[in-house]
Image 1 (spheres, one colour):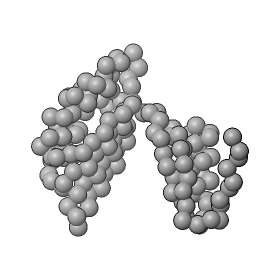
Image 2 (cartoon, rainbow, N blue to C red; image 1 turned 90 degrees about the vertical axis):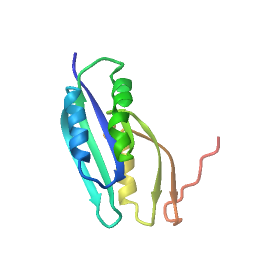
Image 3 (tube, one colour; image 1 turned 30 degrees about the vertical axis):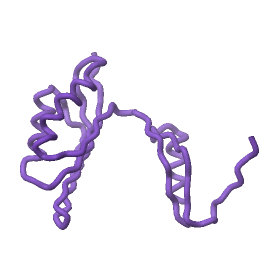
Image 4 (cartoon, rainbow, N blue to C red; image 1 turned 45 degrees about the vertical axis):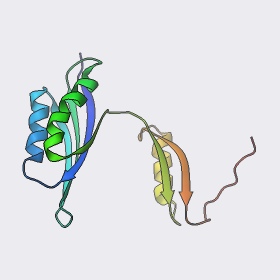
Length: 135
């Protein structure tokens, strides 16, 4: 059976041992880290992390990982979220006057590169307002 890929995002107060605890959890569960990004905001004392990893197992792996990660998250007061790669999100896009970033996001959504469902686009400018077609 092919390993499934997951994304774990978390944030918590800055403290030593966060990366080690997350890495140890993934290793203990036979996971392989594919990509890891982290950022510590020293001024505010807050830590952010996003890890993409592959884990062996069947359909119940997601719930098992979520249930067992709570023991890692608790000592660090983490807010965290774990989802299989490809889970679609409902997204509101906020855009200002220039539309190049909006166009890129919409293109990547239509081409399937970005697994999101755009439910609305809002702006503080009328430059790109389009009339809503009648029902």
